[in-house]
Amino acid sequence: MVKNVIVADDHPSWRGMYVDVVKGSFPDVHVDTVETGSDLVRRVLQGDYSLVISDNDMEEKGAGLKALQTIRQSGNNVPLYIVSGGSSDVPRNALRYGANGFYDKANFDSDKVVEDIAQHLR
Image (cartoon, rainbow, N blue to C red; front, side, top):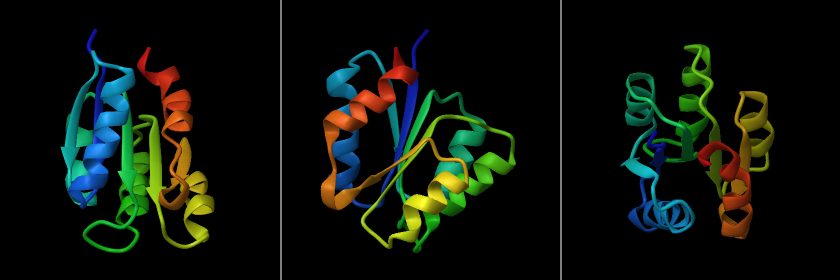
């Protein structure tokens, strides 16, 4: 069975980096990308994803947390990781709203990401 991942970020360079991290360690995984939280919600609720990696601030500040809340309120429990370089409230709120983890863009550690997501992609 092919595993599907979706990456959400409005900046092409960050989006590409997340795709490279996933594909570099899990070459058989299919990766889709979106640029907004609203597109993320739509795709996750219509699709069959094994994992989500989402920026927090996309079309608006907090779009990733809003998407997370909407996805969780729908009953969808796809593993979802939030990435942000924003305020210190984001990590706490991400976990409170049901994220599986949080990554800080300022200290992004691709090895840690791979370690965390491996459980969902193997």
